[in-house]
Image 1: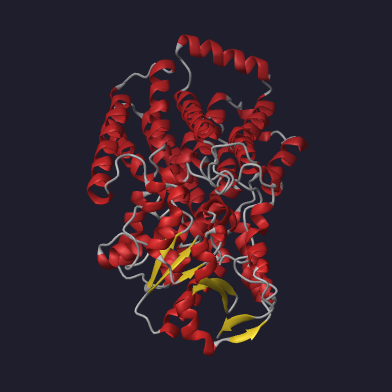
Image 2: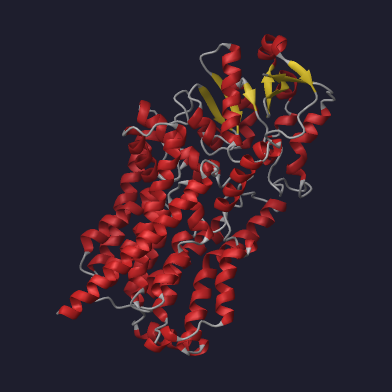
Length: 576
């Protein structure tokens, strides 16, 4: 008995060390990143802020009522955080990062508990290294929901492995999954079915609970969406992501990029950590790869596959199948959508290789060390993610006054919103409408701007009509300001639309370029300081691959500048 108590205390101490180490690392990451985060994370914060303040679900109180958040549960959680008094722009964003960091640290503890029996001496360092992979770090830096999904899915697996009779807890966690990411429901159900078929669990009540709770939760979610938004199953963001330029329906440069990303790049990025860990442990165990696969096949036939292996592999197959059918979105971050898959595959790899006690005293092979280093240092593997980019941007702004450091940083999105607010004040209007693509930070910073989402994610009308309805939409909305954006300029055909070309003129506000409606331009012309265009301004970038059929691959990068140049202006209005 004393030995059991001592072992339990040691286990708790080790798990606490994992939590503290991962949390400390992620807190350092979020402090280093600061506000230099992906704009999509701010979209949920903007929607949550508006909901907490007004009960209206929109990017701002005066914007369209729309389901623009990809995760209803994360949206509600952020609204709750805002409601308790964390309301400043910076404070609210940092709070989202802290919650993501806590989710990662808690998930790390569950991950450690899952792999510790298979490799007692290696579990600690493997856990810490895995939770410092690029996509997981970036999720904390961006303050988004995938860390929460990892926590819930690992919790389901742990309850299934430790005691299949804990069906109420399993059911409760399974019911959360659709509210975090709808598509992950299918992955969890696939995992449960695989456990039933290949692992012969002693108690199948938990597996039934997963399926019933998942379907029941989806039914409730569908009902809520119908009552609140008038939609049934697919969210506005999911519909938008199936439209060009996100998902071109025809061969184009972006279409080919999507195929490579969905069928090759994303699976490699997602599975690579598990493959590396598996090969290292296999080498340390002295086992052969062929023998291991033969043993797994035999166990599958005998229905004695370790539960973490069957659940993790089936979950991964569900994810890869979804990605192959619907296509990976080249606009998202490498490895982000498959974060939970990466963790489950590592658990499966660990559970399929048992290390002898003597392995803990062996020197890790040089090739294994290089492989681990590669997970962190090889950018083409997709594992150096937006947190490192955000840190670089922040450092650049601290050490230089170069305009490029402002224009090419993520905080430029907020400055862009503040430029819109400046125009509103100059026009002396209670609100103005702006058609633009990067809507998260402008939505969070500027409540009096009616945001018309050119990027579709928070625009229910354009997702309903498609780009064919854009000319009518443009005339109906007649935005006060328009900001062009690369592929969306191409797909909408706005620069060929007579209404736009005759009704809007270019105006620079600080380092942001807008096209202002001519009646407003006439009102503000006396406030203009005329001069050449800034050498660097927002937005001058764009998508590297065109989604247009037959268009040059890089045409989306140039279309906005080409249109500005085609106007033949030598001087532009620059508003203070």
